Length: 527
Image (tube, rainbow, N blue to C red; front, side, top):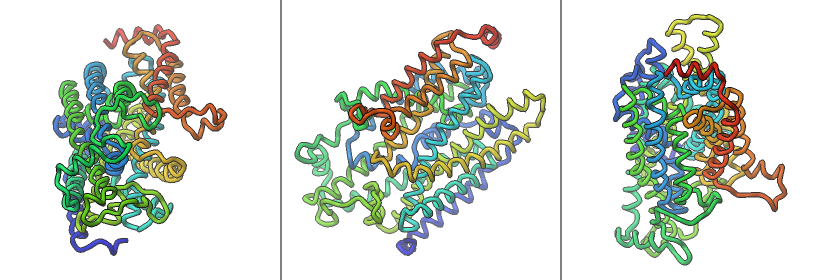
């Protein structure tokens, strides 16, 4: 498929490669301490951190899944930002001040202050397990797109090669400079993939001969027995996967999902911890929620225009195909990838290719550093100190770099597994990526709510609560449900409702034990 690229495409590729080389050289400055490597010495500007949080929350799933959501559905996904804003306010008030008060490297160190050292380690393991799933899924989505564009197919071998290329690029860019490199890289990658999205939007508007008023009218009345595609708030009480973006889900599951993402997931929270103080960290988080709205609108709008392009021949003088088969070499693809492979103009095709890579790298780089920080600060360093072994700060920086390599291998393996996993589900990419996070978030939310709003809980109940959240989520999966229930009793439940149930049961499990007296005395001393 490389022969499909024109000279203009290769010029775009060259410009991006030059940008990566120059920015990589400039931002990959040597870190002499673990605080600098994992927290940027608490010197990062608010605006940079807010864009980094935005880029971390977006991914190839957004680049590919956002248009798919617009084509299949409506603007209701934008309403999830109501839940995100409420969650950001919660995290800013209850969690970020405590993180800065205790000067933590990772969010799970707060559990050590509350329940003891083992709880921090168990939460770290749960995060690592869940993040491998979530980041691996996002890496897989980017890899299939890259494989289709570069190799002309999505054979397993080519997808795995694409996975390895993306991971190698991420490691080369961030392994040396640490979190500062990651954050500045996020800003650059965000600018690249947003520019690519604007270019696609421009190309579609030029390709559709209808005026803006006709397009809006067609979207508001898409066809017989079809609801308006311009709807944002949907009040139907639908507990199935099809209803995960309705208003009731926004005010329940999406609030929990975003509390976990902003306050309990080291992947995003680590960026907030690089600010000068808690006030700046809170500002960065709130600004990122506001910035997400126009970016998400942009990607969904692309899907809306694709709906006009492919399903409304009455508005198209040419290019519309009526009924199309969304497939590539016999495999189903999103409508956006179908457009990229068959219709997109020269120059913009290369821009979309690097946009997908940029979106993947912004999320991948975040996962590499954040997971490495948990491995080093929550698992390796405490174990060394417990043995009485004293290492220099330089040693822990080296350990962090090795941790990144280990994480890169784990994410590559998970992304390869996702290739076969998603063959057995027709869930849209965006929902698939979001739902994977529920496995670790349910237990973590139950534990943190216990820590914040009660004086109960023990190291044993923390471990049991974390396991409970994971198991409950697992039991709701269709492929697992078929193993223990007759088909007549199967329940199709959206991931947001799975999160609500898992969090509630985990919370009950965690508060079932009373607090250890010695730990309680340690908390009083710390406060």
